[in-house]
Length: 162
Image 1 (cartoon, one colour):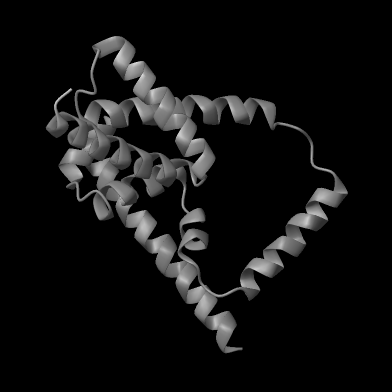
Image 2: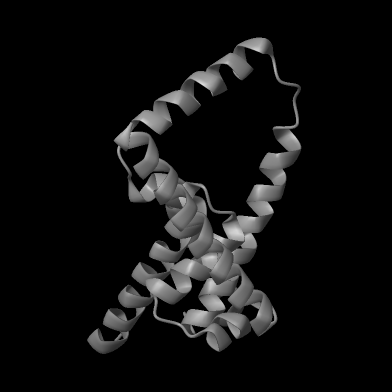
């Protein structure tokens, strides 16, 4: 394999890994996603063909695993878990603003389109094509993501000033 092709593949995999981290918020899950996606693409195409194809594979695998986890996690809440949730919420409010914390308040779809625009530099139309969603939906998700981040940031500023 020529060195130029290896470099392109490396950059593609790194970009795919960043995308997987933005979806899963977990490095280990992101590593699993990128490995599974590369295997899937290589077995179907024989080569890593392009960013949009790899990103679509990562996205589909992520949503498949999310659906699987949701089926498993549908257990009733105990009083201890509710108390733990209240305590952890209080601890979160007391902490300083952290980018990962702010992004965690976003829905997966909002985090995905925000990542694609801000980190990867895609336009709304390109994101629309990549995620197979209407452009208006992408713009709406971007707007909602920005509003949630602003609201979260404002709430933390108010709490810190007290």
